[in-house]
Length: 350
Image (cartoon, rainbow, N blue to C red; front, side, top):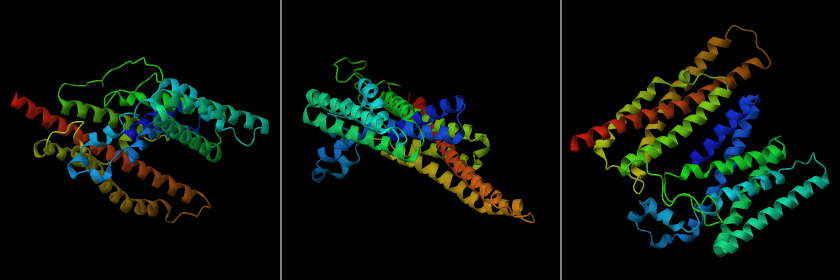
């Protein structure tokens, strides 16, 4: 779930940048920056490290996702998931990313405004939610400033672009939480509430979980397809036929207890293991085939100072992307087979 927030923002930003005519490298850089900012709101779960009574946890309690989420109930999906906070914090993070190439006065002014805005947000959180709110908002501000500082040091994106990426990333985050857990407080610190409960995809809790997992998987697919698109690669050609191994996962619908949002670890970890298996088999095949293809490509040809190395790097990157896409295809096949078997079982019982 945490990964999905970042990947959705990454994919959308990358595709928009590509549509605007940016180079592949620059579009991917913008995507990474936007995705990093989109992940920041979940910094509020760090409160669980202080709220959980680890000494009193039993093995049964540790297997329940609700144990973790209950510990963060007072702060998770509140202030850091607010659209109001995002609209104010995003530009402030952008101002912190003013580069050293600008004038000294502009850097000081930009960071000064950023400090004032972020300090104001911390003060509002403190007044609205008490000391706990101030602490969580402080973590949010520090995380955002950290990402902005990395953008200033590691990219050539201007502060305005970083600010837009930060705002877009933060605004994209809450929507991925609508089908899992308590709905976010979109207009914090105001009392206005859009939803009082999560969006229910289906009355059957297992079907609801499968739908939520499918949405998350679709988000990861979108990110992979965005990379393939800007890299000018055909994604079907990247999928290894060994991804079909995932179809065998359908037997899990018979062998294990139906998963729900409250008890889902056994489903999530097992189906992800199928993806790792499919990707691992594909990677092993690639590791064997890459040297052979390179020998066929470069044998009996004059050595070039750059071409072989660049072609080798491109080949390795293509196979890395192929392994990732094959893993996704394996998980997709596993999910589809599980859904079909579960639906058949449910129909037979009814």
